Length: 314
Image (cartoon, rainbow, N blue to C red; front, side, top):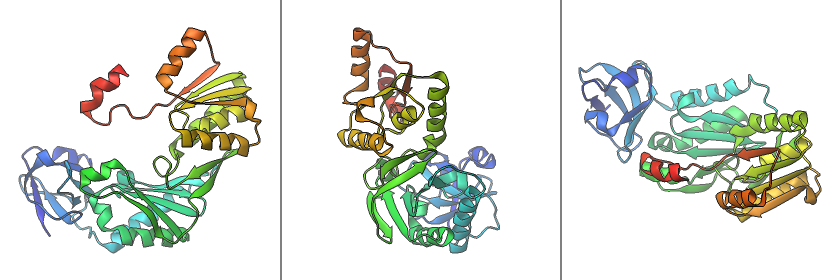
């Protein structure tokens, strides 16, 4: 087992159970991409077992802080099963949910979402990439499903020295799926949609917005950066008379219009604008247009510190 020795004083974050080891914290040592390494303090004290990534500034990601723990296939299978069992304790009003959330579930760099009878996975780090086949089989075993689609096509893969990959990893099926949540349904495309196909993390926010629309009797709603219209449908389900939705993606807007129709709403209750949000807001101000509620969920303006100044201007 190869050992990574940290610089003096750089052990504190690991002692607080932060799972990342940055390039600048390492005094000496190296390994192949995804290889399990022992992380020691400058004084030689064991800190963690981690997956090494020679191409990334996050040079290693911790698997375990227990020196006695073996990082093998059995460890990976158990971590996958534990994550999925944890979700079964919740009464989630949807057939779409996140089953594994990376470092939070002890599987750094792995995202797995479920859409009905289909799993979608993102392998975003060298460690989980190395264990991909074991993880894929463990996912099917733990869920009883047969279809697993890989969406490892995020640009962040390049930071790990990994190519972008997209396609069926286990089984075959349709990439156009129906997501059921709360009292509505939404079309989701797992091959070309954002992230794994949709923003499952906003499920409760969509329900709250629907409830607000009903309780506060919203008439006119503006949904900025609407993507495929999740909040548009939520507003209409809450009784909004009309929703104006803006996005710069024509395909996303087409799916948003399809989602409005899917839930039985007349097309005249929704307007879709293929436009820049900032420019549209300035036009609305000039026109004196007002809305009872505005949904504003912009894309990431500053992926790194280098983008902060430009993001502030936006």
